[in-house]
Amino acid sequence: MNEYYDVKLKQDRLELLREKPNFIFMEKDISDKESVMDIFQEFKPQIVIHLAAQAGVRYSIEHPDIYIQSNIIGFFNLLEACRYHPVNHLLYASSSSVYGANKKVPFEETDAVDNPVSLYAATKKSNELMAFTYSHLYRIPSTGLRFFTVYGPMGRPDMAYFGFTDRYFKEEPVYIYNNGDFEHDLYRDFTYIDDIVEGIAKLIHTPPEGASPSKVYNIGNNRPERLMEFIKSLEEALSKSLNRQVVFKKIFEPIKAGDVPVTYASIDLLQEAIGFKPCTPIKEGLQKFTDWYVDYYNMT
Ligand SMILES: NC(=O)c1ccc[n+]([C@@H]2O[C@H](COP(=O)([O-])OP(=O)(O)OC[C@H]3O[C@@H](n4cnc5c(N)ncnc54)[C@H](O)[C@@H]3O)[C@@H](O)[C@H]2O)c1
Image (cartoon, rainbow, N blue to C red; front, top):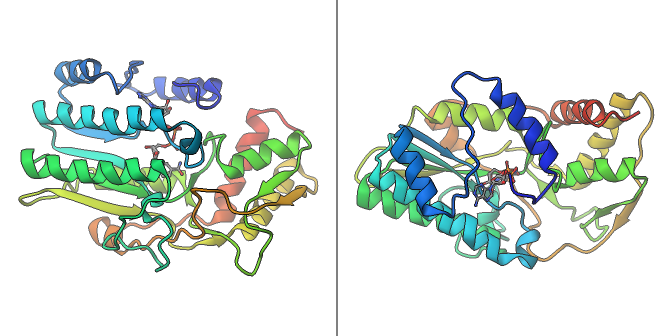
């Protein structure tokens, strides 16, 4: 519930979750080891799905401390809790950003990822290393998931698709960091939120085995979109939601420090493991986002 972005949106998500049977919410900081240990002591979880982190690539340039606090110390505390209260499976969020500026596409889990270009990416890669060590030393089955640009209703307002939509309604231009060079546009592998949820749900029952039971999977759409095509689809989806034509005012700027030119997931390993691959088409996912946005913020 930190204030990295609009807390009201977080509270509204929480209200939806509170309707679910057996849902318990505790407002705790994972960088506080005692709190994490107490929760494990009290509930003795068999499955842990760890998604809490300080997200965002650009924010890590200006605010490095919080990334170390939540993503390194917080993650370490989770591992320690799993060590002293053994679990059947720990699943945790890594990120496509670990691939840095790798040129070879699609990105495969076996590719070298030793050159992260943001501190955020470095924390996620560190999580994978730490998880491996704990799996090896204490037999904690762990699965890291490298998410590729996740989007959808109630998503993160700091992400481009959400910010562009905000800016349209504020009658402000959108900034596009691709140098205005459409020949060499940025490519992003966008993944609809429901596909992420389904992937995680299926993986829960497939804990890694062996002497060091630790695995990492990409979870992306395996169909990168040109940034400009993506923006066009967003304009079209918003036009449909509002029943009038939407065109963003666009300003083109150079690529930002820490951003990567292409993300493109190979999902062969994921498919082999659970027989599932993200498949929601971008137009369908964006339509769900804009329909939700217009309704939630009461836009006309
Ligand atoms: N959304 C994406 O495209 C994407 C891509 C790659 C990886 N990820 C990873 O997926 C996970 C979920 O991301 P999200 O997009 O839902 O982000 P999010 O910011 O909406 O969710 C993360 C939550 O963690 C909480 N948190 C942060 N520090 C905490 C702390 N010290 N103690 C307790 N809670 C804390 C935040 O308050 C936030 O609500 C994160 O680990 C993120 O790094 C997301």
